[in-house]
Length: 157
Ligand code: HEM
Ligand code: HEM
Image: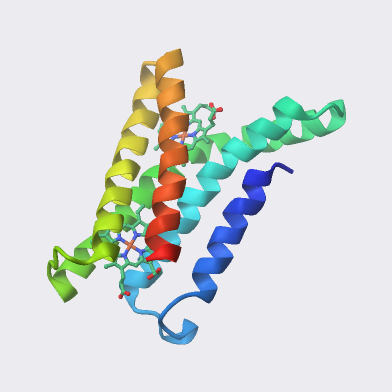
């Protein structure tokens, strides 16, 4: 499978191991953040599957992956939109509990990741109803940017 799939899994595992709370006592805003992250990485794995289909030389493997991709497709839009709703609650609870501290890098990296997620979901719905090559490219590049933004937000700062 493509390198992206392993990168997605690796990021999720690092975030789980690096949490500043014990796993059995996670506050609700962290559970929401983790669930949103999982859904985002699940959707971003579509890129991994598509590149593997493009690069595979084995016809059987191509067909098998294309069938998996077709089965997951109806859920793609709802998985992405649900991630946005979960992250809005994640941010809402954080603002409610901690208030706003402009010097907090965690907060700023989160806000930036949240904005990219919003654009990602918008570009997805626009792409669905008014498809174009440009929108396809925007959806993929925003996905790449979103991956790095969530990686910075969850594991670096
Ligand atoms: C794509 C969007 C987002 C994802 C996937 C996400 C995910 C996460 C995850 C998994 C955590 C817990 C792990 C860790 O602390 O490293 C976390 C913590 C945090 N997030 Fe987000 N987040 C997102 C957007 C936001 C937004 C919009 C804000 C703005 C309020 C925000 C603020 C924070 C803060 C302040 C923490 C630390 C909370 C604490 O340690 O109690 N995040 N985020
Ligand atoms: C977390 C949010 C999302 C991520 C990370 C994401 C990621 C991706 C990726 C990687 C692809 C394959 C790119 C390609 O090679 O064409 C794709 C395709 C697509 N996405 Fe999203 N997406 C998200 C949300 C959405 C939403 C909310 C919609 C709403 C309709 C949507 C609609 C589409 C459509 C129509 C396609 C092309 C059809 C297909 O994949 O077969 N996406 N997305």
